[in-house]
Image: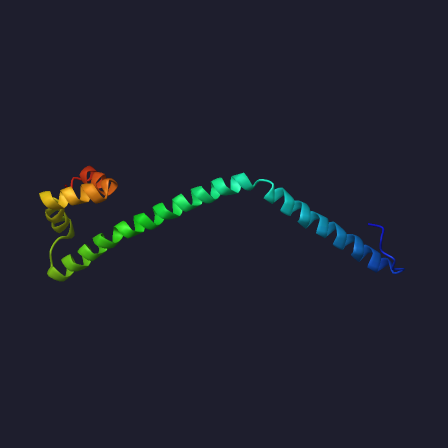
Amino acid sequence: MGKSRSTCFDAQIADATISLVQYTILSFHRWITDYSPFDRIFASVLEDAMQYSIASEQQKIPLIIIEIFSGLAGVDVIELTRSVFRGEQTSTRIKQFNPVFYQNLQKHGAV
């Protein structure tokens, strides 16, 4: 500041304002980048949350397919699901490939 050589008062005010804005932006950027270890932590948490969200959405796909086919066949969705998941071979495969889904099925009495 104080380095403006203009004789116009408006130009001097503009120069001081631009210098202040530049300082504010650069100090904010420095403040953000100084906490880079936290960025990695938050990025990891965000990635885990996104994977959980994607996995939960993918688990809905087989249920939607079952609902569509049961609607076409005129069968009750709940009874069809219970009869499919109660098979010993199916239960073993679900337990092996997706234990969380299997626990949810047990909790709701579908297995």
